[in-house]
Image 1 (cartoon, rainbow, N blue to C red):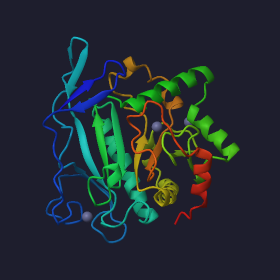
Image 2 (image 1 turned 90 degrees about the vertical axis):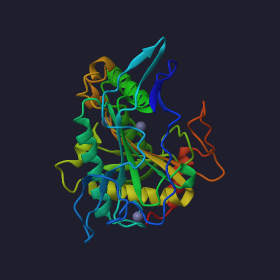
Image 3 (image 1 turned 90 degrees about the horizontal axis):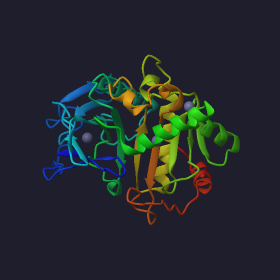
Image 4 (image 1 turned 30 degrees about the vertical axis):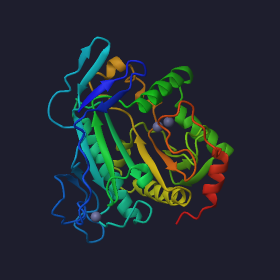
Length: 330
Ligand SMILES: [Zn+2]
Ligand SMILES: [Zn+2]
Ligand SMILES: [Zn+2]
């Protein structure tokens, strides 16, 4: 496996003819407590209801990225490539096989969010890694890999394209207005109310003004914060509101979609030596604002959003937010 950079869009892709094939799950679940197939455990969160643990990070059984070695960035004429150095983990959201983020207890979801923050912080200490991605693919239509409730984490030696676009745009907006663009979006949406789905404590769920897919929903903190992982450390209880809002929002999404992609966008590793050359380190804490993006896969609507040049979304965000608000969240 190797990483190649597209010289036009400057985005990295991972490719190789030796891609690890995920094997079909054999009877026994790999991620239930006590499973003989449980991969190597990286981190464990304390139990909340008598189970041996509440959430757990393990090494991905078929990792696309490997933790050892140097990225060995090379150029061949106009092309750049590097080895697929990184970390690839499975984040087990709950010890119970049937407790998803929308039917687990708030306390369990809080533990999972704490685990996410802890893993991001820990991997950011490795200066080879520029970015830590955390995502969840739910439903066969979304390419869900395991039946147990899980998310995945990938630490990479590059910043993924979408995040890079956001970072550049946020920095530009800040240099012009000395304000965070996400704070401004939240303020305007809360004033207009049309695209707001729900609010719980310091968190809001809203449908973005220019959605890529029907019912696209973002969850953001109302108070400015660039780094998700900072929210989760040393402030016990603060994640409860986020857990509640995430649960309510996913319940609504599930009522309109067969599956979804969920991704956490947080600030990149700014202590990374290459951060200075990327030029985003100075105002990063002021201009970026972490958030969760949920991209539902709605039956009969647009199937793939990645290949589209211009997104066509047959449901406006005002209609989407109005419909989502009507759905009982529990
Ligand atoms: Zn299981
Ligand atoms: Zn902000
Ligand atoms: Zn984002």
